Length: 222
Image 1: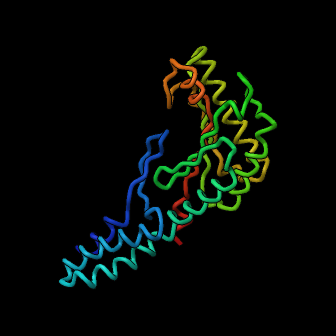
Image 2: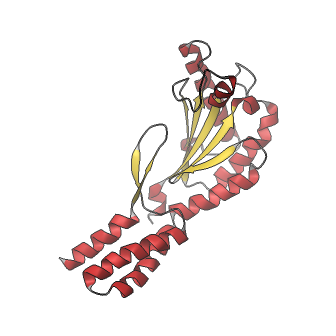
Image 3: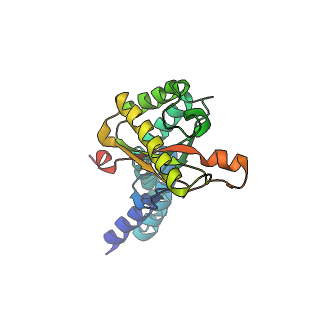
C-alpha cells in the first residue's frame, strides 16, 4: 500500500496539463518547463514521498533528481526551440510566446500579406525561411498554421481569406523542407479575436496568422 502511495505522489506532480489555445483540447504534459523547474517539482514530490516513507529529507533529495530527469524532455526541448526561434526572429515583427508545452508564433498580417490578399509578401520570405530552419532542426513536433481575420466584411469572406492565408504559410513551410505530414492549416475567420474590432488597432491585431508548435509526446517516451 505504501509503495502505491509513493508512486501516485510522484506521478501526480510529474504530470501537468496543457491546453491548445484554439481547439481547447487538454492533454497531459509529462514534463515541467525546464530541468530546473523539474528539479523543484521533483523535490516537492520527494517531500511527499518522504512523508509517506518516513524519511522526508531523503525523499526530497531523491525527488529532486527524478524531477530534473523529468524536465529534460519535452519541456527542455521546447525551451531550446523557443530560444532559437526568438534569436532568429528578433526584430522581425513576429512574437514568440509559450502556452504550456506549445510554442506560438504570432505573425501580424501587415507584415505577411497585402490587404485582402493571400499571397505571402516577398519581404516576409526570409522570416518564414528562418522559421522553417528551426522547425526542421526540431522535428519532434506538429505545426498548426491558424489564419485569423478582423470583423470587417462578411463572415464568409473573412473565413475564406483566413483559410487561404493559413494554407499559403503552410505550403511555403513545406516548400522549405518542413515535412507536410507535420503541417495542418486551419482558418478561423473572425471567430477568435485577440483585440477589440471596433478600433483600427484592434482590427490590425486580429488580422494575423499564428503557428502553434506542439510536441509529439510519443517521440519523447523512448
